[in-house]
Length: 193
Length: 171
Ligand SMILES: [Zn+2]
Image 1 (cartoon, rainbow over the protein chains, first blue to last red):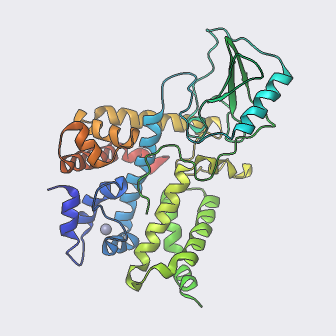
Image 2: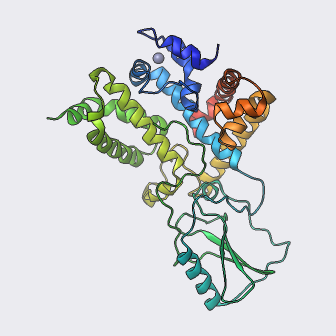
Image 3: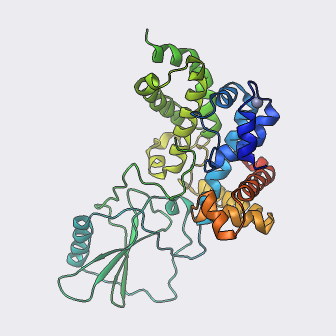
């Protein structure tokens, strides 16, 4: 019998013991099972959780592991990692960035041996847009990517700009990443209600 | 006094204890308490059964905390004068010590994952990394949905066992 169907049976009982609740906590933390416990389908279970220190602490542990799990499976070993697209950077902002960078000049060609430090978790976990391709005034195309570097923050990310073989790494303080509050680091988002 | 205010006054301490299980930083606990209070005021009418109120409030608080942990852009709003204090749970990378802790934690989770049986690790990877639901995982692996749930539950329970110390410490 699966944990979810066990849960459906447990729902028939008026009172749950901590051990019975404990068995359901991984499912609550996962949040994805059909018929998995939710406040709406099992108020008695959540009433227990609301008042039981032991079960509440245990659920919080599962929840925190879930958060860490998402972070750990999405950490890639590359020294400079291009983040997956989360949301589309508004084209005018990217165009403005490209124009600003081109006007300020100073293309820097980075050798293949120049490797920035490993990405920080904080930077990695930022909801940052993926590669944005902006058509320059004339070919070649300019690619702008957000990369994770020590010192990257949501407000001041580092940009890796490629124009053909040329690569420039910048962190323009005047251009801020405006992450929408709804952006999330992964499509996996259980526990929603 | 309306129902929301009564509930919040009565449950404030319990609510703060719940929040503090997820975030340790006092400023963040305050912020989340305020955020949850607003939600309570807006949504309390949706709860018809008075006996369901506490459970509803708990789940509201839990979701608010998880949203906070999963929304890293919010983590940059902590005033710098508080950075020396113990940081929020899951809060990463604001200074070298934080980064070290965060990397240690990631490494610990990855080590714990490696020690899981392959069958449990694979369903966790499909669930968390690829975001598949239970049905899709079952199809992908050619097993039943119940088997997927059993593996997920056992895998999570085992991770919790292995990571208990880290969870209690500085996760
Ligand atoms: Zn209990």
